[in-house]
Image (cartoon, rainbow, N blue to C red):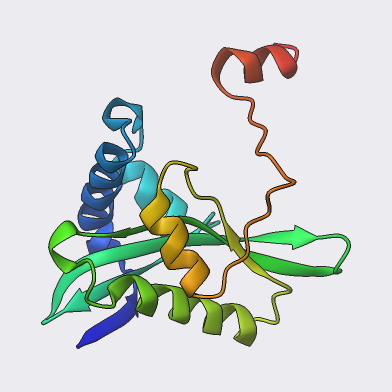
Length: 158
């Protein structure tokens, strides 16, 4: 049986381990800059930037989802944005990913969110098929734009 529960401060090391495992899966293991202190502040500090839930099987963490609220001016309501969803290889195919998505969908409904959305790498065909089976619809006409690092500093005029 899979249990979903809110993350607690003591879970930060597990969450960071999962973030590193996800980065390896996504072919960018060197890209993770987050530390335990950074995640602890972001999830449990004075002004939390995000929330996380853990999926457990037999009391052991097997996955997590990290999410936050965004806002739709067209809807006039906030949405729930899934930043990361990860399930350990050994637990895949046993319902943990579906349980995490269902939990977040229920949370979005309970919080009166207009939508629940996330991004997926275009080469991750398995995840795309899984998301489609869960009812997700790809937004093919939209592309993600990002400014970071030196380009962000230049854009800020600094």
